[in-house]
Image (cartoon, rainbow, N blue to C red; front, side, top):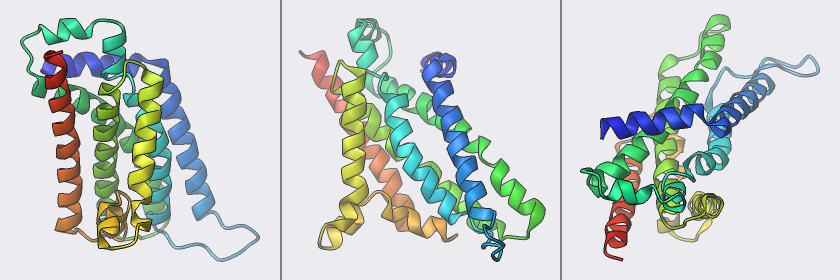
Length: 231
């Protein structure tokens, strides 16, 4: 399993798509950070907070994660290399977890690169560090949720582009589920559970939501892979 994680991560790091996605993510994040903290027209300095930037990064990641995850299974199936994986000693659980960990690791590195922005804030102001840490923890868990949905979508199609589109639609539905009348809509919304983290509060229920959300979609992916073996 470790060898597969390293292999997939190396392929991702060497992929032009990953390079472009990383550059675009950092550029947009830097632009948003500059817009948030640099006053225009000689106004007052804004509050030194990461909350707005965290939500902005979440929006950008909703577009980027499906693109980085679309080849996880779809490309393997299209290029017939998935048949080799099926005959390997790896179980379906190990295979799915390896794909998930490799992509989440790449995205974790992308998020780590943005730590320069809170570092800049700490250099020129004295914001509370705890809310920043909580905000990044929430964004990290949200990113893992994006990956879990995206690799599930990738396992459903032989076409990477169709997988990316399917993942984006699923994430979009889960994002705006909070607009559904009733408490279930709010609880299902994938972005609503980021709110407590963004204000520096560690909420066990929100943390549990993301952990269970990731586990649920990984479980669905594993069961789908098991079903494919019997076709």
